[in-house]
Image 1: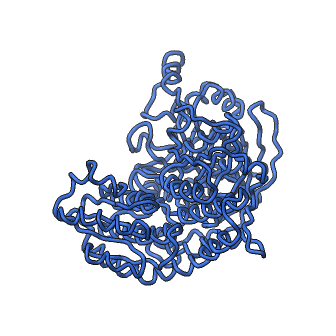
Image 2: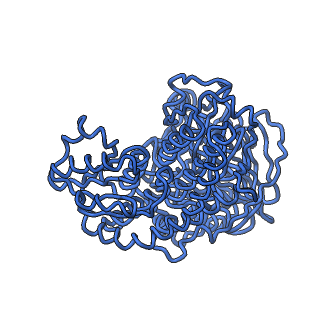
Image 3: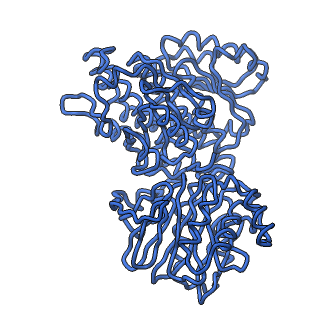
Length: 610
C-alpha cells in the first residue's frame, strides 16, 4: 500500500526513483509523483493513474537533480487525482513530502494551520498537512522541523522530506509503517520496501519505530525520538532482482502459483533434522512453555486469516489446545482474554500489516507469548515477536497472494506437529508418518498443476461471465473455500461468496437459481457423503456445479457438471493441494475478463493503514 522511493547522490535522481517506483507497483496504487531539488527550487511532477502517465508528463523535462523523492499513492483521504497525488508541498513550495499511512489528527492540525498561519490547502489529503506543518517549523534546519512536526502528529506513517534550501539531504521518519535505508557508494536511498532498491544496493538499514533517518550522499544517520544517534547493524539482502521478474510467465501471479512446489519443499525441508524431527528455527519456546499454554490465538487478515483457519484445525487436532482465530482489525477492540498462558500467533506475508501489528502489540501488552509466521525477513511483525517462523516462499509480487498462503499452511502443520509431539498428544509413529506425507506434497502439487492447468483454463472460457459464484465445503474444505472465493473476487471482481456447506439451508440456498455457479470442495473422506448431499441440494435448484475432489472419488461426477481431481492424500493436508485449482480458476477467469491480474483495482499488497 503506497510506495516511497528516495535518492540522494551524484546520479540522476529522476531515473532511479522512477525505476524504484515501478518495482513497487505490486503494492497497489492509483497515482504517482516525483519531486527533486534543483537550482534552489523543488520541481514537482505528479499524475493520476499508472507510472507511465507520470513518465509521459515528465517527458524531456530537464529534471537532472541528484536529490529527490517519489511516491505511488493508494487513496485514503481524497479520491485519486492529480491534486491528491504525492508529493505535497508547503505554501511557498520549498518543502516536499511523501507519506504512507494516515495522520489521525489531521483535521485538528489543518484547522490550526488555517487559523494560526493562514495556510491555504490545495488537496483533500492528510499528507498536505505534514508539508505545511514542517514548513511552519522550518528555519533552515530540516531535521529539527521534522522532529517538531511529528511531535504534533498522531497516527501511523512513514514520511520522506526534502527542502529546497538543503539540496543534498533527505529526512525520513517511521511510525508503524515500513521504511528502509539503502547504503550505496557516494549515494544513499530511502524506500518503503526492499525490491525498490535491489538493482542498486544489497546493504540496508531497517528503520525502527519512531526513528528518524537523515541521508546525504556520503552518510546515513539514524536517530531515536529523543534525537540520540542510533547505531544499527547492516542487514544484507540475500535475494536479487531477478527473483522478482516474470521469467516468461504472462503474470507474476501465474509464476507464483507455479513456484509453490518449490516454496513448500524449502519451507519443509529446511526445518527437518537428520533424524526426521522438526527443527523450529527462530522459535525458542521450551517444553515447559509449550506444555503451559492454555489457549492459542491465531490473528491475521485476508489470505493469512484463511491460513489461520486451517491452522486452528491442525493445532487443535494435533496439540489438543483450544485455538481461536480472529481478524486482526477486530482483535484489539474487544478486550480479548489474553494472559501469560496464551500463545499469540500472528500470520502476515509482508510482516507490515498494520492491523496485525497492532493486535500483536496488544497481545504482548497483556502478557502473551508472540510467535509470528512471516515471509519478509526483518519486517516489523518479525522484529516485534518473541519467536519468528519464516516461510520460504521467496518474494511475492502479485497483490493476490498464492505461494505465501500455501507456505503459511506448511508452517501451521509444522508448528502443530511440533507442539503435539512435545505435549505428548501424538506419538512418534504418527509424527513420522505425517511428516512423510507432507514430504510427498511438492511432487503431488507439481502433478496437480501439470494435469489441471489446461483443463481449468478451458473451463474458465466457459464460466468467466458468471457474476455471482458460491464456494462451499465442510471441515477443512470450508476454510479453503473462503480462500478460493477471495482469490476470485480479488482479481476478477466477481461477487463470490463462501459458506460452510451445512449452512446452505439456513438462508443462502434462497439465492440459488438456474445457472448459478457453485464451486464445491469434497476432499475430506469422512465428510464425502455429506458433501454429495449438499451438492444435490444446489443441483436440484439448477446450479452449475464445479467440484474439487480426490482422485478415485468418482461418485461425485454424477452430481457435478465438471470435476477437478487432486492427488490422493490424507484428509488433513488436502488444503495444500485443493487450493491450487481455485487459484488457477481465479487467474484464468480474470484473464478472460481482461482484468489487471497482478495489480487489481483498489487493492494493495502491504496494507499499512487500519
